[in-house]
Length: 373
Figure (cartoon, rainbow, N blue to C red):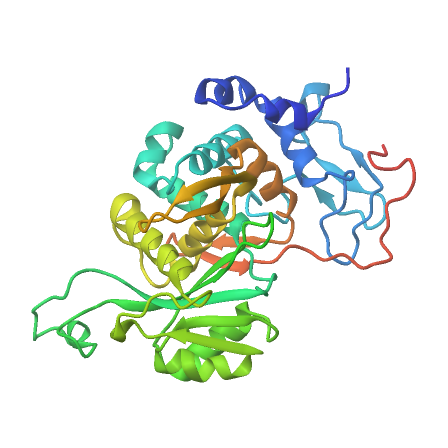
């Protein structure tokens, strides 16, 4: 019977089922190959993309090649399912990566590297790099938000510190604070689409920084909504429409005009930082933000329900259900090729690319050669 990766993943709902599904390395490798190459085995080189390749004899056949190694018939490049992905050149078993991703997606707000290392049985430092590689899978910086888009700023960091001797602690106008700003952008759900969220760390909340961050995330045809922050007001002039609510005047909703979705995303960021990670640096903030933003859209529309407002009015409210973590894994590994990071000399990470490989349009799949040998 042919191996069906999708059906294999559908049976994973509980942690016990996950352990059984990822029981051996061979099964995990077959799953990863099915996810990374949903249309057939493909050379990961951006200037090739050929579907013609053959498997090299591995140790099971008395050879020295590692399992899952293939060679492209067109360019001669040797590759595996992890080549050109955040898992590139990993020394960890694929089973460890699969388990780590499932546990990360199963948690509502993520898992700290300390707790995940206890579940995986590897060091905290190795787990920290594994988590950043998985966050790279969750990054979506190519899709720009359109429709009704809400924007707001949020500050990340600890409480104000009374330390006049520390110049970094004297930054900011309100007391001594080492907090740094970020921009949150949320696309409102339309019909059965859950909408998309985007979070970007900023060096400051000046008009230039905010305008550049919005331009990278939002289409000019979008209807922007925000509060009366001066930088957002200047940046909003670049969009087809821009409405604001004045929080200082106790105005939070005016018809369809509000920024409550962006405020809700900001609250999720604060709760995630306080409850899970406790702290992350501005240098690596984009990875954590990509994980939080990815979770925002992992839901499906299941219908409507009647709800009463505080004033007794009845209105229809959309109902959403979370996409199962196993199904999210299929989506994430399907866009893995092209996203790369490397370990630095000091043991940190250096992100090389957050985008997936876009092959040339003439590299179409050849009939009958999806898994050619």
